Length: 296
Ligand SMILES: O=C(O)C(=O)C[C@]1(C(=O)O)C=C[C@@H](O)C=C1
Image (cartoon, rainbow, N blue to C red):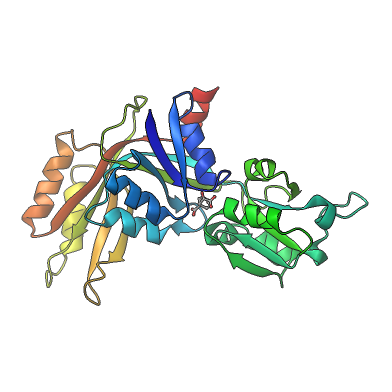
């Protein structure tokens, strides 16, 4: 049985998405307090695979997690999938719902607990209903829900999943409060060994490219190595190497696998330019709709 690490406690978006990804298989799930701890456990072998949220429709890249993926000792990316992040306002119903059934009593909500990314996904709703509410950023959405559960009577609410509200037996004060409903998170699976997964028609490869110094037009040449081979890039992002001010690498996702003929040739061409290239993983990609179909 494989050991899977996810951002806990139970009831996070990561937990829901991992349950869907590994549906129908026997796995042991282990909650972690921080995504950094998942990386550490995947490195020291105390888990086989780790589930890492990497990008969100509204908030873009989760930078800290991208930076962990890039560390020299991080295990490779073995798969990616997308999962809808549907956030809800959660609290003690007897305390924070209007008695006449008229919905949440916003005036009584003093503080909202959640993960920074989840709060950022609900800005419009929060501005419209509670422009002056105080926020407390916690390690995960379910961590916030748990704190609210343990502290009734203080005017505390959380932002998190329906699954989380059921798990902690709290009321859904307001449902689907994300700024728009097309809010997806991209998760990656990291692990030392190649997992056995459903076949997929979509493959991606993530590479890190560090450009040589003082080489005018280097990025242009890197991109053209993909362009003339008609290899599609799905993401490119620059991140500081953290070694020197002004020194950056490029984090690039391309469609295709390193098992193909074209992609290794493109990477060789880029290396020949004097760039450093590191492959962070070549892996199948599963859109949410496909995972849902398997479930049905
Ligand atoms: O806090 C959670 O529920 C998580 O799984 C983490 C996380 C993230 O940090 O990106 C994952 C997806 C959601 O969009 C919000 C939060």
